[in-house]
Length: 222
Image (cartoon, rainbow, N blue to C red):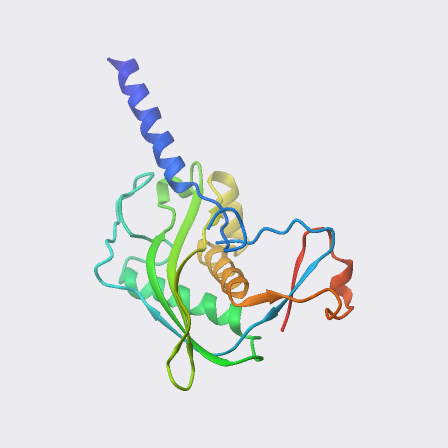
C-alpha cells in the first residue's frame, strides 16, 4: 500500500513538472515565445513601430487559484504580491514589462498595442522553494494604427514563458532582489521587443560595440 502511494505521488509530481515546463518561445523559433538565433554574427534588431501606448486586458473569467500545491489547475497563479486582487496585480506586471520593452521604440508607424492575457501561471510557494519550474505567461497581441484604430497586425497568441528558480537558488535570488516579478517583467520586455522588431540587413547594420558580442547574440537598436 505504501509503495503504491509513493508511486502515485511520483507520477503526480512528474505530471506537474512537465506541465510547468515549457520553452522559451518565438515566431521565429521552433516553439512559441523566445527567439532562436543560429548565426555566426550578432543579430541587430530594429523596431518596426513607434509605440504610442499599450492597453492590457485581464479578463475576469480567468480562473484564479490560491492553492499551495505543485501545479494548481487554474489560469492565474501568482504569489509574488500579498494576497489581494490577482487580476489587478498581474495586469500591473504586464503593463510594466511591456512599457520597459517598448520604451525605446520611436521609429516607424505610430501604433497602439492591445494585449489580452490568456494565462499567467507562476510558481506556488511549494514549487518555488523546492523544485522550481516555469512562469507561464500567454497573451494575445494586436497591433493597431494609433490614429485610426485599424488593425495593422491581426491578433496572435504569444508565449512569454520564463524559467523560475527553486529551492536555495530561489532564496538567494530573492535576497539579491531578483524576485519572481523581476524575472517575469524582464521576459515580457524581451518578448515584446522580439515581436515588434525585425533584423537589420548586414549591409545596413551600423558598426558598434554590439559587433563584438558573442555568437548568437541579439542586439536591439532603436
